[in-house]
Every structure is written in structure tokens, then in C-alpha cells.
Amino acid sequence: MTTLPRLSLRLHGGLDPRDCVPLAVAAERAGLASMWFAENPFQRGVLPAMAACAVATRRLGLGIGVFNPYNRHPTLIAMETSALDELSNGRVILGIGSGIGARVRATGLSYDRPIAALRDTVAIVRAMLRGDEATYAGKVFSALGVRLEHRPLRPDMPILLAAMGDQALRLCGEMGDGLMVSNGCAPGYTARALDVVRAGAQAAGRPAPETVIQYVPCTVRDDGDVARREAKGRVGAMLLDYWQHGSAPAVRAAHLHHTGIPEAEFAEAMQRLGAGESAVTALDDRFLRAYAVAGTVEECLAQCATFAQAGATELGLTFVGGDPETDMAHLGRAARLS
Image (cartoon, rainbow, N blue to C red; front, side, top):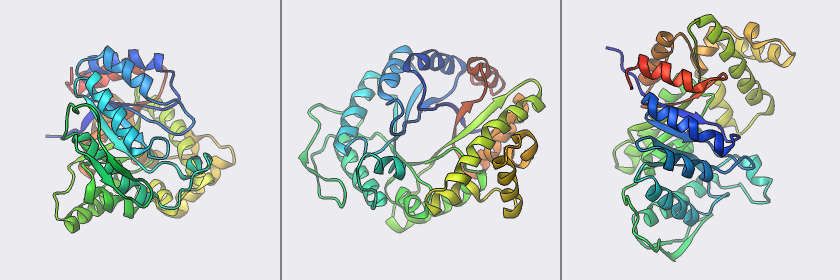
């Protein structure tokens, strides 16, 4: 029997909050597990949309994917997350990451210790969400005898860590309750990342986190060839951006390696995209198998199972195309979620 991960909706950070509410209602109706809100500096903050969706739904999980401590001090993360959890009757899923270095630096802040910042943040947020007093002198962020002035609804709220490089992955094993894997990572990356997470957990003498959320673009169509053509456009734009603009070596490796595609063939495809060739001809189906879920509904479910085999327990699907409500319903019926 094919094992599927939980299926959820992922929204990008550029959406008008008013457009998120009908998507939340459609996701809940389709039987999806959660709705993940991506937040990056200088896009829309996710709290207005999350609050509106919390009121409009009853069951749907509401995932923060992710808050970073440079935008919000860890004490503010705890305050806002706890209040949102109250509003939603305990449906919030908290993801924390160190942020995008270039965007953090654009605010005038230093980004020279992102792993230390992440460690400090988890320690402070976890203590405050438990209802404890947080006294913590960190290398980047500190809290001096502070606590929430209300009783948190869920003192055991899980904290997931967004991680790509090995240091962050080991920290996830040491401190996190789950791993978040970004768009643009192949199943091969996820399998390797979990090995590093488990090693970090073993070194810390604690059980390895079992929850693994992975973001993936998704295109569901009655005609699988049409779906694959549409998905190639999204995948091509995503990969070319990673290729041309670069990033920290660990992040670049996470995005571009572990695909099974020989490096020379990958580079050639990126060069063709960079020269203006259409992704439909520049990318073959290996790129879709690595970076997307695309095809007929049956093909999509089979690809979701591939991510599950690599270790993903939940896929946050970004539905490509103009009718995500219909796509969610179609996938939900086929997976017998609704």
C-alpha cells in the first residue's frame, strides 16, 4: 500500500490577506491538513492573513513558515504566536528560521552568527511558550527575566526549525521538534538532511524529531502533459534564480544537489534557461521529479509518496495555475481526504 504524507497548502508571502481566506476555506473543505504561510522580509507580514484564516476555519492547521528573530525579537515571536494560538483554539504550528542573510543585512543588522541566533531564539521562545520565566544570555539574542503575562494555551507547542546547512540541521536534531524543508529541495536532499538531524539528536541524547514539512510546487491537471509543461515554468524560474544569484554554499548545495542529475547536465540546463530558452524544452522530466509534484491526480499522488519515502511527513503544496481551489478539491478527493 502506498504511504502518502499529509497534504497541505503553502501560500507565498506576496498574497493579499483578503485572498488567503477563501483559500483557507477551500483547503479545509478539501480535507488538507494545514495551511502554511511563508514570510520573508519586505513582503506582507503573515499575521493579518493568519488571523483572518483562523476565524474563517475550524480544523485547519495554521503553519508559520517561518518567523525569524531579526524581524521579530524572540520575545515578540512568543507573544504573537501564543495570541494567535488562542485565537485559533490551538491550531498554530510554529516554524522558526534564521532568515535570508541578504535581506537581514538590508535592514542594517548583522548576520554573522545565524546558527547562534537560531539557538538563542528556540531557547527563549520555548521557555516563554511553556509559561516559564525566560532568563537567557545568548550570543545574539537575550531575555532577562521575562515571561508572558497570560497562561499559554499549549505549553508544549512544538517548534519546528527551517534548516538547510549541516550546522542548522544538527541544531534541529538537538533542539527542534520538527524540520522544515524549503522549496527547491529534492527528495534526495531530504533523505540526507534527516541523517544529519538524527545525528544531532543522538549527540544531544534525545529522540530525533519525527515531523518533516517540505514545500513543493504542485500542478494537477486531467492532462498530465499540460501539468508538466505548466510546472516546468515554475521550476525553471525557481532554479535559475538559485543558480544566478547564488547564496551561502550550504544553501546552494541544498537547492541544486541530491537530484540524481549529473552536474554537467544540470549546468547546461541552467545555461539554456539563462540564455532565454523556455523551461519546457530546457528541462526534462528529471527536474520535475526532483522539484515538483505535477501530472494527473494519480501521478501527483505517486510523486507525493516519493517525498514520503524520503522522509517528508507533510507536503506544503504551492498550487501552480489560476484555480487552486479546484486543484485542492481534486487532489483531496483522490487522496480520500474529504
